[in-house]
Image (cartoon, rainbow, N blue to C red; front, side):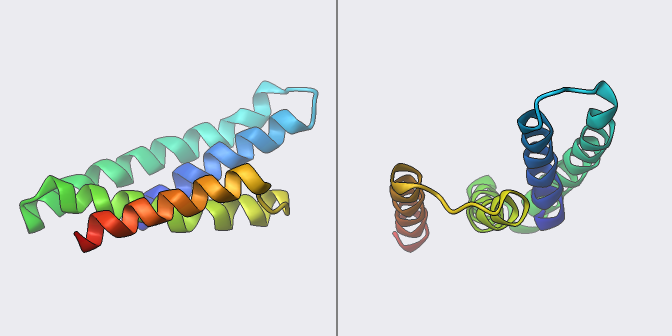
Length: 105
């Protein structure tokens, strides 16, 4: 699941990075599209195997969302090199607190 989430996030962020450059070449989207297809296959398999192994879709969903919460800022910072501004940081912290309360309660 982590591999699928990472590939999906990376594909999304690379697409945004291409758009940031101004001139859009359709050739630049080939790799992100193929990577997103691979990510989708990984995620479908992870959800399937996770549900078969655990028997509770909510546990699988919490693992997926938690991996997004951890991986996305790392990938965004590594590609864009910018820190979140005040509003995004507050939203990120509230999302992390919400995820923590879901797991703890």
